[in-house]
Image 1 (cartoon, rainbow, N blue to C red):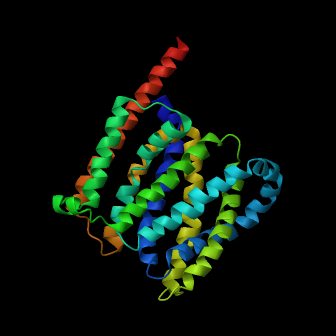
Image 2: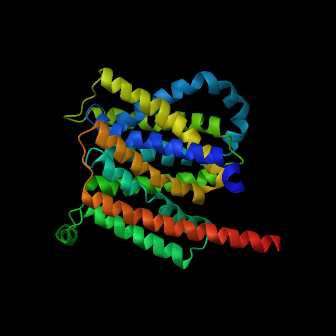
Image 3: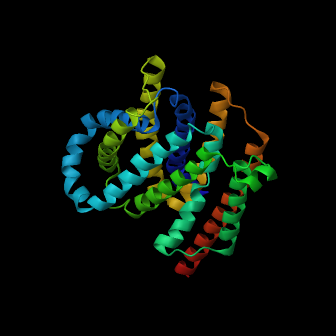
Length: 311
């Protein structure tokens, strides 16, 4: 109980981040009607960078030495969390629903666990492996729309598969963020990575909009979408997530990603014409069950480790 009260702010920030990102999945789906994916991501981070500049430029100069001494880590964060993840998500939303994308995205904690094993040599318990396997079953169920015929013919939704690629990018971003959370200042790191992300995306956007049939539409609706993704999804949510994760750790924070599809499904059914399908509910339940199973074991193991350390 004391632990919950102590970390109440962190929990609030993690919930807030996923609520905002749930809206981002829905608006990302709507925004696909106005912007191609790379250009959409470019506009999003340009808005975020411009909004941050009046507040972050002087702190950036103060933190420049630290940021420069870890320039390759900052670049990796820019590629994975800023340019990579968001662009791939927006690309996937041209081919799949926001509900599907958000449910598949909820496998992030499992990818974090696997990549932690591969990159950080953290051991996976039997229950964690079981949880991962269970969630993979849930993903396959969603991708196949609950049809053995679809599964046998491998006719999966391209957008859902791209979400899985985006999840890998985000998992790498989360692991690196946690590892360097006590070294890299969160605000100026976000400011710097947003700028680098814009530099990476700009030439790619130029190539994109020159393709036949690709257009960019500016109207009141598209400007409101850019305002939301630039301010809330890019600044408020990222700072909330990074701050909350730094307080309670990547593994425990990962479980909160399960709230993202809940918010996305709620927003999608209220504000768009999307319908929550039976296979999405069933598959989502399987995925979340696997994540909860893995996370419960993680918490138990942590308690055991603490007890041994204090003995």
